[in-house]
Image (cartoon, rainbow, N blue to C red; front, side):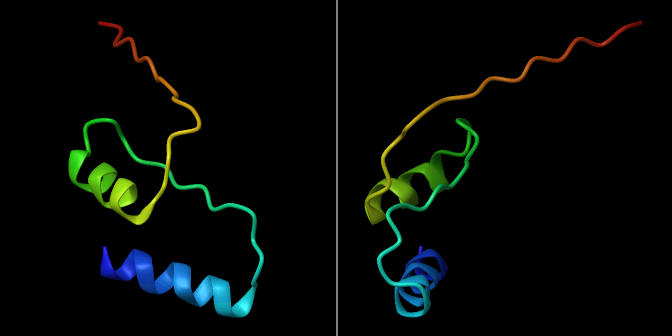
Amino acid sequence: MLVKVVNLAHLDRVAPGQPSVITYNADENRHMLAVNEAVGFVPIGYEGVWKKELR
């Protein structure tokens, strides 16, 4: 969380006024999702990937 907060603060210093920041996390990565939620990120979309293994 500290790295994310420091990077967001740096972005605000070097490029103030950015309207948004997009981040991607797997739905299974609950720890990182909790970090994003605590910092104030909100979901804007979901993406699914399918895989078929041929034998």
